[in-house]
Image (spheres, rainbow, N blue to C red):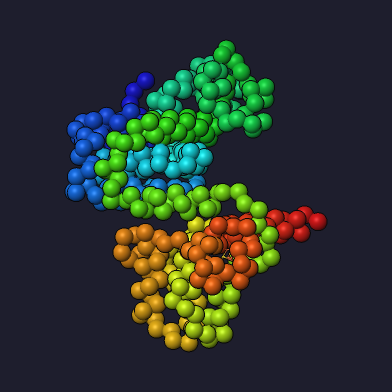
Length: 367
Ligand code: SF4
């Protein structure tokens, strides 16, 4: 089997699109980059880009964007560094991260020709034949590939009747599939490879401590944000926004003069709610928050912009601040329920209220 055009015509473009292939690994080996090199100051930007990418994978899931880099080796390093950072997050998130990575991979693969898809599938250990070599006549024209049945069973998505072996033509040890099905099988295999990779990084976490120094605070902030988001809590939802935030909102809208800490809590809550939960881009979230402050008695656009951009991580250390915990809010006199929501951070309330509102809407539509 020869080298497909997608690889022979532009090796750099191939590596940029498919960072978990053997070609990408060989490219990094050829560049002679050692782990120690990544801790050098000149590589700090790569480490920061990997952190940006990891945040995008976690926050946007399958809508995440590939890192914007033109150098293929740097792009591969950013993917691998992001996975090394993922090893520091709760293992419950590894599947979400690997799924997002595998979807970036398969979105590109789905645009390639049959020769390229077959090549990449084989690289990932999926034995395939053109369907014409497995069977003749009409049926060979209906399907493009035959996948070795054992490899099919290893790669197929679980718990989905569409992939059940009983509903597929199985001829001479090959399961017949079309092009997009083969891309999906590769996607599943990439996902497993990425999870294995994160697992292996997890066993060698101490090797990366020095490399991750520039993003240490961002990484623990992300871990905290995620534990707030996914920690199960029993909240009694009465309003869309937590009562503390609603109360600050009310004061702002009526032309009041909220305290410095109330303003900080509002901006930090909103920037996380709008980006991590509602899916807004950070710049749009910042504009919306600045707009919310316009009704405050002593509004000053320049000062507000500086402060909101700082809290959002657009200025300073790129660290997006979390709102104070419920305990802190209560101590500051900003918790109208006297810790009555059963949450440890106002964002937990929002995670629950969004779900409750969504479920109520779906119930209404269904009835
Ligand atoms: S318990 Fe927490 S979420 Fe609820 S009002 Fe108080 S500070 Fe806000």
